[in-house]
Every structure is written in C-alpha cells, then in structure tokens.
Image (cartoon, rainbow, N blue to C red):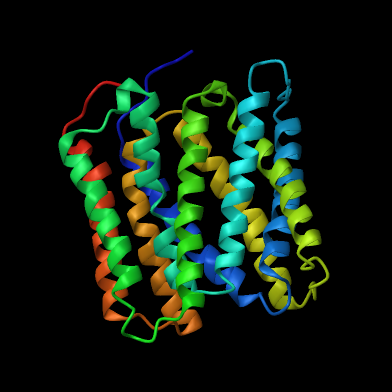
Length: 304
C-alpha cells in the first residue's frame, strides 16, 4: 500500500475552494425544498440517484468492484456512518437553521484530527493542535450556552446538537477511509459503498418515521434533488475521495473552514437566517480552532 500523501498545492487548494462553496449550499438546498419533500427523503433519493451515477461512472472506466479486496467491512462501516450523518442533518434541519447546521456540521475536521491521531502515526496531533481542539469546543459551548438569553429554544438547541453529531459522523467516516483498505480503493468504489448503503438505510428511516410519503416533485424539489444528487453527492464527493488518496487529510481539512462561511452567507442571503451575537462568536471560535488544528501544518511541510 502507498503510505505517503502530498502537501497541498495550487490545484488542491482551488479544488477545495470550489467544493466548499458547493457543500456550503447543500443545507440551503435541503431547507428550500423541505415543504415539498421531507429532508430525510431528499437525502435518501439523492443518495440513490448518485449511486446509479457512480456505478455508471465506474462501469464506463472499466472498474471492477470486487468485494474480496478487503474493502467490504470498512465499506459497510463507512455506509452506516454516512447514513447516520445525513439522518442527523435531515432531522437537525427540521429544528435549526441552515446557517447553524453549516457551522456545526463542519466541526468534522476536529473529529477527523482526533481519530487520525489515534490510528495514524503520520497524523499525530501536536500541542498547538490540542489547543485548537479546545478552542473549537469552547466555540461550540458558546454557541449553545450563549444563546440561552436570546430566545434560543430547546428545539433549536436540539437541531444544533444533531449538527455536531453529523460532524462527528463525517469525521469518523474520513477516519475509516484513511485507516482501511478504502484508503487505496478507487474513489468511485469508496463513494458507491456509502451512497448505495446510505440509500437503503436512509430510505428505511424515512419509511419507519412516516416521512416517505412527503414527496411533491415541484420544480423547486426537482432542482434541489438534482443539485444534491448530481453536483453534491456525485461530482463533489468523488472529487473529495480522489483528493484524500493523494493529499494529507488534515491538510485538506483546513480548507473546510470556508464551507460554514459559505453556508452562513447562503443561509442569510437565500433563507433570511438571523445570526445572534453569541452564535457568531461561537462560530468564530469553531473556525479559529479548526484553523489551529489543520492550518499550522501548511507552514511546515513534513513527510507523511
């Protein structure tokens, strides 16, 4: 197995900037179409659509998706974590704003760094990175507790908590990929495990919770599903896993601090989300913590 990953170059930086803008619009798209299609059904349908596209892409490239290469077990684990992430997102968006979800979801790099610290010697955390983790979690606490006197409801707090759990699930997914045979598997195969497994699991959740019947395919719903299924879950995720095979995960993660900025901006401009001072301060600490955890390494290139 190839054990090295490259430092960030201009191509990776530009690609990550585009991906962050796409991911930042994701929660807004789900929220916009929520009246027509229940959020959990949106993420289930988009996963199914994307799984078909990824399978077709793999067939076009002549890739054979064998289950005997050691990827089955981590593939199923990644699928379960992927489904959990989007259950938390879909349910969370029923209670909190797209702007809040964008910030709490992208605590994922912190959880990724913690997980990789435990399993990969090449990505051990340095003292300043532990400081960054402390700053990020202080920001989460401020965003939660600081809004107690500003009319923050229990429903919003619950939605915010689900956003943090979604971030933790995403971080755990990245750790599974980087520490298993999926690390060297074709990106299409890694993604197909998650999308196909996620579709089955998410559809099951929608059926159990009675949300499967909430589907009205209006033009807005179609636009949201196509954006999520083709652009987000197919093109952007495939690109993300391709990058993970070539660059250090913690170095890539530094760029994800831009995603909540895009997400909050889109939420305010498109949905009219209101941002409280305590949430803004907490979000700033979260982003600062992520930068401390992932960004300082860019200034000191080191071997994987």
